[in-house]
Length: 158
Image (tube, rainbow, N blue to C red; front, side):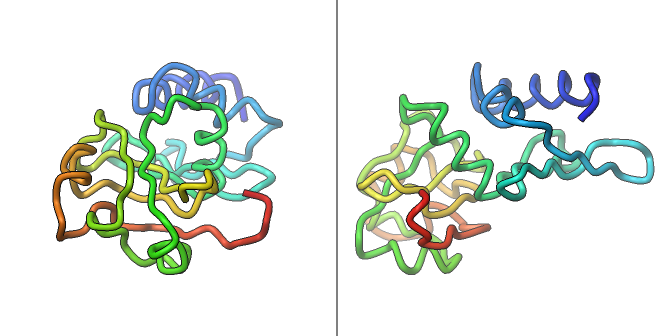
């Protein structure tokens, strides 16, 4: 990744998830950046898989590898949604997480925010956009809380 891409992508990540997110996502090794035909960054891929995709709206969409890096680097629970045993196998398969199964959520989450779904044990299960606010996930008994984009395989390395 060249210096220009790294500086720009780090700023976007810090804006989207808070200070330190860009360093967490892009400082480990030298991720590969693919570009569109116009030269705009598109995919950022690390040794552990797809970290993020830089969408046309100027925000990132998370990959599971990126979600794991954010989870490790943001220990304060930012952009985190927690589910229990009932949801784990379904969320890992890429199925949506429902509000009735959410046991904890960052109150700062807004609908549309990219979030990391974790198990109560702390393992990363999936990533995707929030459909409800963090408080709404805890208040509602029905409805989709997070539209899961990618589920994480149970490999013991979470």
